[in-house]
Image 1 (cartoon, one colour):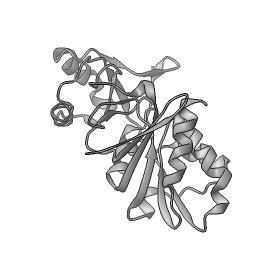
Image 2: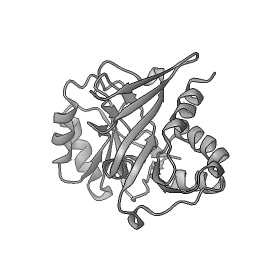
Image 3: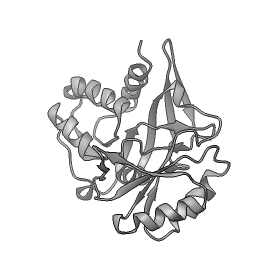
Length: 222
């Protein structure tokens, strides 16, 4: 069985009736959304909100009605993916460019579950480039700032032009290498004027469902 599919399928066990469900962004989450859409009629009432325009479009085409986040008070459960997850269940997210909305919804969720395939597990974060969402007005000065900090920044492009997030910002991907203290780095970067959000997701995931070819592991925050 495909490892992404097995993780997504297991996540269905945590979806309860009469709840507000946050839908994350990314390939594994889209498998989950497709599986959910196939059995949505088995629930009496589910309300969905989305972390990105991409997810909203994908879910809507499958018949799921997305409620804008500003029309709900809080989210019962968010199911999302991750680009890296360490031993403490902290992660790097933002490879799909939705880190700001993903973090907003996660921070307003009673529970957050990540679904990943096993190659996303790492001992220490940093192999995956760290996405930092920035205000376009300041991106050149921030590039210089990150270069001085030896963060090896690179402006994310799409078709040769700066990638634009759903909130109309740019993303700078930083190839940092091993991150020894992800919480400290997140706070340091967010204090820089012009930085909107950082793709370090510390102390957010309550549970991580890890898919393998032949099994599924469930990791829980201690």
